[in-house]
Image (tube, rainbow, N blue to C red; front, side, top):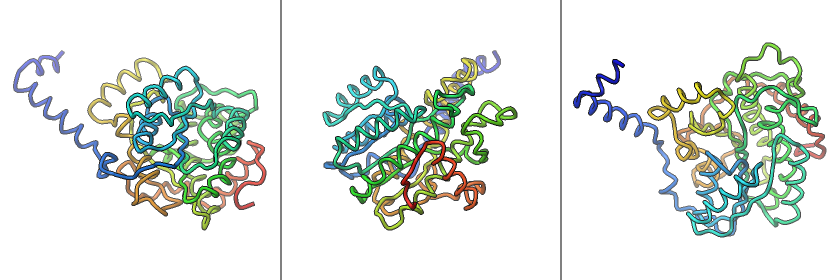
Length: 327
């Protein structure tokens, strides 16, 4: 009530509006996608989770650049709606929908099979799909659902498509990470839903974002000299529906605070677009790129070669992957 009384006074209300504008302006980074004139004519890009949020904004940008864009979405209905929105707003009719559920390794393999059959090249792969706050559960394939969705699915998909991307080089792979990877740690038993008793609500998300960062770096090492670059990006704190599993109250508070301090999906997509298309990112690989499109040192937990190798091998085993890069 006190805040409402203050805001009812014209001077205080004006000060509040000025503060809101200043805070929103500060969210804009140093790199502006609209000023980047890179054209993607003749290039094919895949964006997972492209029906909403950051993924949809990234796909929209690629379509505006005249790219051939494949929306890899779990929901056919929401994916079709996104496809129609993107085609209408950009005028680009070379936008296509493919069904992909990254929590299911069978779905990942089926999607990859279709891409390998139908596409002559893939120039950009954006591993964007993911979720936060999902209840712990085991998939029909014996994998913990958050680890499957956020880490194992993207890991398997990338490895299945990497030979095609080598033939398409120069090409770029981007893993959507998070600053929350700093709070993650590696326990490979978690991939199967074991030893989760002491984990808090969002720990699994933090750990999978650390896994994304590690695998991007490890894959970059394995692909050196191939013309394929691999980076992980931090979009910042972004208001998207990735938090749909949180309580209504939590989401309401998050959105109110976020209006002033957090990024919109369009703003959060900038670091991904920068990594995927910019001249500045050409040839850059094995890096962690922050929300202001600058190279940043990732957490200490992501820089242990022995742990990284162990995670890679455990991920291969969990996804029944053979013939991975560097083997």
